[in-house]
Image (cartoon, rainbow, N blue to C red):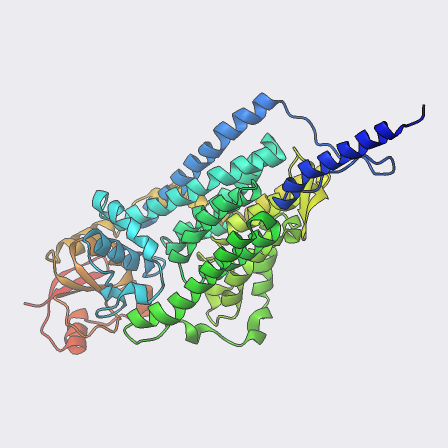
Length: 510
């Protein structure tokens, strides 16, 4: 049959109407609809999963992983706290900060020196949220459980997203690999740090971004500038990515970029020097030459582990670029423990790794995936999806006995240390409210009842009491023969020994 003018006009009108309906979707950042083409390859379909199975998984698995992770990391913290395991002075510092906020005082932390305001060390005003924690549980152990809870919460949005995009089995495995990843395990092992608050904020922001909710992503990312000064650069980069991915929200994305960059400059070059007792940013001297970024080889091993955490394929997602600001300052730093997998520096990179992997693996419901700057690339084959998720889990499992969480299933690690009773007695020998100069071993435990400073710190005030641990690593295996004489020589005051047992010695002014 021939086509009349009326038929042609009707078809043209139909095409124009269809184009008009699709235009807003393209402006909103959705991929261009694919029109049937006899020469096009068939779209790869994923294996169908019954809807009830998906719904059950997305309701049960994310909170279950959150509870398991919170319990595991919390128990690790309790085990360390009660066995006098002190990785550094950081737990003591943050315990003293939490006490100050809980008592509505400025975060003055004598552990770092006389009249040292910790907001002049790193910019982390979000830690004021620790005040209610201190009211309920005034102990350094409470901070360890707070961090455990924040890590656990971060698993909920990312795991639910993974189940939606990959299906119940793969999605659940991806969520488990994330929440028990080497980055979060190491952070829990070295005890509390401010980055604990960044982990759930990044998880919520990146989940919202991958669910095509850019405004929610922006709102969750904005508070990151209050966690630590360098995260302003991560926020700025995220804002740029939002502007590129969602043209209809370009202004909002650029606004977030400006917000992040602005706070980075303001906090690093204005606020920190202003509140710092030396009038400077303390960590500038830790930066080396840009030529040192690529050496020693341990840096390459860290990059490989991060890429494996992203299933390798995550490297083709633009979201992987969010790791660059953190890696840049770490790899230009001259401090050895900035470079490897241990310590807490990889924790903020774990949500980025999982989000990048999910972005690159795509969504089984739309059959679209991200590939570099494309958002409508075909999803990878199932074997690639399985391999990627397996890689994200294997990179942590390869640590074998070095995984910190294994300590909670080792019976000998729960046996009470023989030094527990002498430690408690040493603390009891110090009068409440005393200015106490103490080793790192009992620093966090001493904070609730005493005005604590570090025994090797730069403080000029003479303490009321000194509590020394001859086994503390800060003595480098060369403790003084008589801590009382040492204290008299150090502070020019008279001291007498009031307690000595289990390697602990307490000397107080008469």
